[in-house]
Each structure stands twice: as C-alpha cells, then as structure tokens.
Image (spheres, helix red, strand yellow):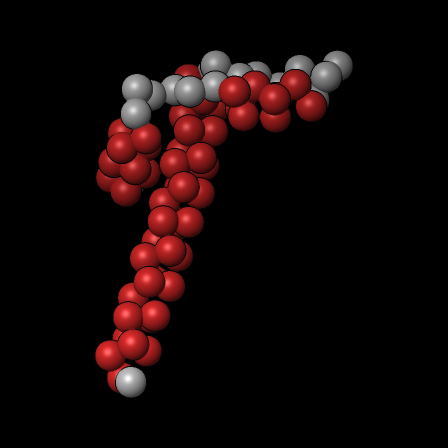
Length: 72
C-alpha cells in the first residue's frame, strides 16, 4: 500500500515539474522577444503586443529557453 502512495506522489510531482517547465519556456520566450525588440508596444493597438508574444519563437528549441532561464 505504501508503495502505491509513493508512486502517486512521484507521478504528481513529475506532472507539476512538466507544467512548470512549459510555463518557464513560455515566459522566457516572451522575455527574450521583448528584450531584443521582436515585439513592441504600440499605443494605438496595445493588444497587438500580446498577439506578437504568442506567435513569436525566439530560439531554435525549447531547451534553449530552459537553459537561459535557469542560467539567470
């Protein structure tokens, strides 16, 4: 019984780490797009910034986002 409870806990922790990883990749992609100027805020159309951030892919792979986000 104790073995199944620990397996459930491990699965939950792996799912949480995966979820946080996806969030980290998204935030790092947005941060870098704003830093290098790929997306800019236009006062006439502020919602265009959010559309640009959703569509822009700043690096060649998700692992680079993780690397640069954890590197600091």
